[in-house]
Image 1: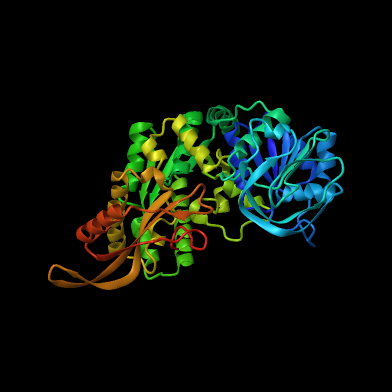
Image 2 (image 1 turned 45 degrees about the vertical axis):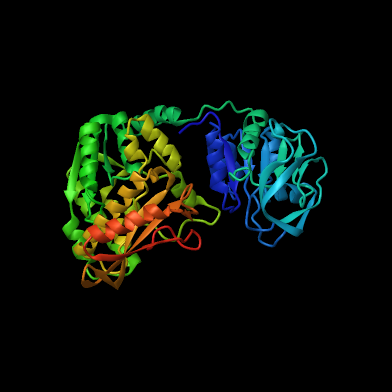
Length: 517
């Protein structure tokens, strides 16, 4: 997709790099991540309006520290492209432009007050005392010639610098983190006051351009879309239908691991709301038969992935005009494959159909490979996908298979579905659903003694999980009100035969993961 304005972010391995892109996009300017090893030729072809250097877990002076493949600053200066270095990015500026960096006498992690000591276009609308977020163990020990100090904190006398003539700026703190009160304003100042961006990149402009791109790519060929029922595949299908109409063939496979009435909801939504036909396949018997007796979570994932591919391949052959395969690949997936760390070691084929057999000879259509999850939701709303569907919590590719640790049976799945229904119903009744990023029940492979009426029971334990998060990379457990927890527990134990004990998971990510398997 062509972009009239593009900000390039060079990734040196910071945990916050994706947040930079998100914040820039929130300002209405398209941002794109590339590894710090990007070539001069590639960067030149991208024609960026500005370059941002990310933070890093490394020390810029250490052996093997990540360094650009060419002189980024000379490159930018020759083309009048402004550069903004954040944390490690600032230290890289200092280290390469005649300054020096060393281990800090006192590390800074957490909040700090920014003291503005000189005027800068970065500070437009910002006053001294603004709260910023620090996360560094190194600091500048010698200031580079030609640069001016424009800000400091109690522990960082060289907290911010600039060379106005060369349009190079550096911040020791992280404006992309929401703890930096005026961080978004600083980034906006870099985009509009320094880079001269005009903005205007949003869901509407994306849809208009995407429709034209899809039509140009597909022509008169047929497109197959694997419709899981999740937000990404659903919005992708609606966008494709807008672009190519009846050339789109959707396939929904029920693997027996869905939530209650999941398949029916998906089919009805597309038939009734969008007048879009779906090839519905009930393959639950096949999936559950192959999963019988399997307890290892990774083995479960592989079985589900292989079986999905097999079923999808068979269904796809019914559409003789199919030339393309549509996937709901998101930008974080793309970032993972091109990150400074290199490609991901584990490929989760159950999340998409990228592992389909080569003999299918289908070319990929990935309309969302430049978008983050929240941007896909915005596109969905613009296309008329109902809010109740758009706002649904994420659901894992392997479905309930990873929410039943140990072996899977139809009985266990049914018990879990009922408990999960009650759990989500109570969350909605309490008005908490949209405050939570993801919530679900887990049926533990543990049975405990209980007393129900005058009878002794020996039944399963149900664990309830709810987290808040921005993008799933980190997450905090949600402080569920006690009275709500009490209602949840009472209803699950009373209404779901097979469960006599309910526990609540108060683990954050890290060290735990969001899902249990």
